Image: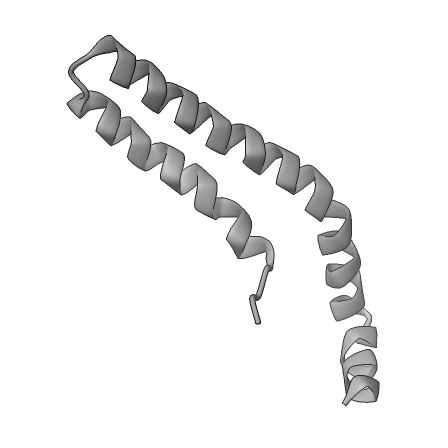
Amino acid sequence: MVRQDGHALWFQPKIAIVSLFLLTLARSRRDQRLILVFGSACIFLTILEMGAASNHQIQIAKARLDLSLPRASLAGF
């Protein structure tokens, strides 16, 4: 089972930040471009995932606030 909550959305931007460190270590222009493309792709995918997951996350947050989520989970058990 894989838990995919809102905290998982921030993994790729963290990887993009780490790639900036690798960018300082890269010597050739080709490697620098490759690292920049990788970091940009991480940020782009995060933006896409946040757009897709935000509506779902908002529904979960509302269900937690009005306490309908625990009742639905209890019915599932």
